[in-house]
Length: 613
Image 1 (cartoon, rainbow, N blue to C red):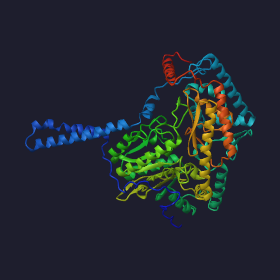
Image 2 (spheres, rainbow, N blue to C red):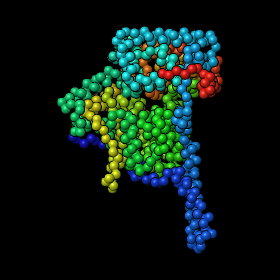
Image 3 (cartoon, helix red, strand yellow):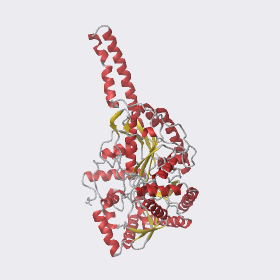
Image 4 (cartoon, rainbow, N blue to C red):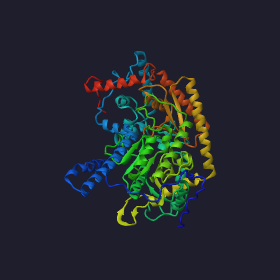
C-alpha cells in the first residue's frame, strides 16, 4: 500500500487551527489524589507542634515542614473549593436520589388526566383526545402480520422495554403502555419517508439517531459501492487490510487535520479508546466533561443516572463558565483530556430537550447560541493549550452533519483528538478516533510492559472500509458540499416559517435549530409536553423514541417535504391544544409543588394505586 499523505493544512474540509495545539510532552499527575493531598498537607502542617520536643536544626526543620504543609493544604483547599464551585451537581444529585424515589403510577380514574390540577371540563377534553390517539394507533397497528410482528418484538426485544420507559414520565407509563399500541416495524424507505408493513408512510425526522445525514437512498448506494469494492476479498477477512483503507486514511486525516487514525465498531467504543489513550499518554487520571453532554453509554463518562458504577475520575463541569476554565488551569497536571460535545451549542449546560424533565423553556436565538458557543470553544482551546491538556471533540453526532469538515470546521477550532461515528460508516456501524501521533501511542517506548490495550475483531473490517470510502468520496465532491449549504438555508427557512405560523395560531411551542439539527421548545409550563411526540406520530411523523431528544433533517429533504412537515407539525400542535393538554391555569411553581405532594402521598400510601408494568 502507498502510505497515506499527511493532512493538508489548507484543506477546505479541515479546520483552521484557531490556537496552537497542546504540547507534545505532558507532566504526569501526582500519585496522590486531591483528598489525599488535603490530608497530607494538614498532617504536615502539624509538624511545628513537635518543635518544643526537638532542638537546634531539628526545630528549624519542623517549622519548615509545617510551612510546607500549610502551603500544600491551602493550595489543595483552593483546588477543592474551585472544583466544588465549577462542578455541575445536578447529575450527581440525580444519581444519588434515583434509588430513593419509589415508582408510582397514575390511574385513568385518578390523576392521569389532571396531574396539573386542570378543571373537569379540561379533563373531559383530554379523555377524548387520548381516546383519539389510542384509536389512531390501533388502526395503524391493524393487520395480522403487523400485529404478530409487534407482539414478537415486544415479547423478546429488551431494547423496546427501555424505550417504552424512557419516552414517558414514569407516573404516566402504565396507562400509556396499556392504551397506546405503537408499531415499531418498517419495511422500506422512499427518500425521507418510511413505509410500514401496512403501507402507511411517515416522514422521518429521527435521522436514525444521527446516522442519516445524506438521505437513505444515498446510503443504499454507499453500501452497494462498498460491497463492490471488496467483494473479491469478502466482508469477513480480518487482520490483513484491503487497499481501500488508503483513501479512507487520507480522507480522515484531511478532514480531521490530525495525524493518525484508529477504527472501532461504534461511537461509544471510539470514545472509550480516545479516553484510554489520553490517560495512558498523559499519565493523568481525570477527564473533564460538561454538563448535559452525552458521550455514549460507557459508564466511564456517565456521571449521572443511567449507570450505577461510581465515577470518581470524571469532573462534570458547568458549560460556558469561567470557573471551569480556572479549574482546568488549576488541576491541569491531573487532567488527561477535556471532552466536548460540540452540539451543546444548541443548549449549553442542559441535557437535550426532553419531555421527561421539560416544564418550561427559555428561548434564545440560534445565531446568538452559535456565536457565544464559538467564543467559548475558542477560550477552551486556548486554556487547554496553555495548561498542556489535550482537547477531545466527540463528533460522533456532529461529525459530517454540521459541515463537511464537522464541528471543527464549523466552529473553527482544532482539537487534539476527534471521535467520529454514525454517518461516517456509510450505512455500516463504525467508530473512528483521529489524534495526534504522540497521543495515539498504545505502548510506552521506555517501559516495554506498559501498554494501552485497545483493539477489536471487526475494527477496519473490509465492508466497513468500503462504505466509508464511498461516503468520503461523496463528502469531498463539489456536489456534496453544495448540498450542505442548500440544506442549511432550507432548514433556517423552515424554522422561521414554522415559528411564524405557531405564533400566528397562538400555539405554545417554538422550534430552534443548529444547522440541520432542530428541536421543539415549549413556551408554557405543563406536565403533558411528552404527549406531543404521540400527536406528531399520529400525524405521520417518524421520531426517535430514545436518544438525543433532537430532530434531524437529512440532505435529501425537498421543499415538498419541508412543507409536509410544517403542515403535520401545526396540525399536531393544534390538535393537542384543542384537546386541552396545555392548560394555561397553572404555573411552573404550582406544578413542582404538586409533584412534591404526589411524592409525599405515595410515601404515606395516599396516592394513586401503583401498577406493576
